[in-house]
Length: 517
Image (cartoon, rainbow, N blue to C red; front, side, top):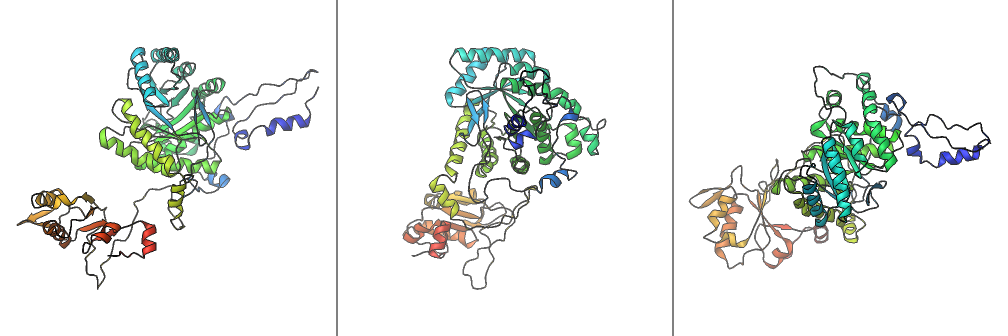
């Protein structure tokens, strides 16, 4: 019995157009026997058989897919980037699901009991997934014991194996854990020996794809057969020698490295993976993720993104770096799973991680109040080049001939420092300490601005007009071109001469920039 054209058509359309182009089945044979059988699709086994994404450097990608365009859904509203759903045990990643909170165990994975206890503490804290390090076969065997032990204790939180330099071990651990994280920079080859390996041409660069495919495809086949999740996690600090040589130490190199491994996944009709573009520098990290998101839009891909700043540190510094990097991308609508990487016990990562996720969810345009605020901003054309990162420039206030107040010192061309103060700081016994803390130089008790002095002060409550001492301290700072910023409603109730009114954009338009006193 032959397969009719109608049946062949049905088989073809069952694949999405994007996924169908990702692999080359060698044959869809019709057996000569009289019984109807379905032959097994043979996926590419070598680099020569894989349909690779056209080169960016040669211009082939631009020619086939057009110029690079958007990197987020909307520039004026926070709309989450649409992605497919990726499954990781009981947890799902993607735009149709809540942001996943992740952390990483700090124990030695071979310490089965200690790792289990730490994972359970993380799960009890609220994390959705925990990553553990797997350096070799010993840790792979321990990982299987940890997974089994957690199930027995009633914990089904997914575990992710962090793999480096161990293609064979990664296949072993895929039998036990729900997710595998691979680093394209060192999964198969972490060499950085430029003297022996210099990649000057496109042919030099692609010549080693055979080696990568040989090492990586067996893991992809295992993950596809077991429905395991994978993270293609590029790290700015561990790019391979060939990427560094051909693309340099750049976000573009990070993106191209990830796309290359994604091509191998797609060649096997495996799509249960996410990307990450981590860096210790938030600026590099943001640029890498935006560039990858833009490439996915151009290629018609919709894989979720895991956000994180590598080795952010501890205390306030670590939390601030993560907030800058992760928060910026979440405000773009980019990101489906996050980790705040701190050099502290993993339990302490939950509060900042969860807070960032909560803020992101509250800022989405689907939230009525967030939508109202975002749509109040007039439309504008964003002409920035998303493939480069430059410092934003702006014009500072200029002094006009008839101005009564010199506003030139209120902001600084290299970045303004605005300090929050309270009326109590202007009392006679405190004011000298205040001047010093603001970076002022003093002479006979009078403050003078220096290069390190705060440019302006935020004063939410104005001292009463009868408090002569406090108002004198404020006036002395104003005399040396220090801006005093006060909420407009406070100035209306308690006027302060030459103060700068702080108001929302909506109020400024409604009041025409005027304060009623």
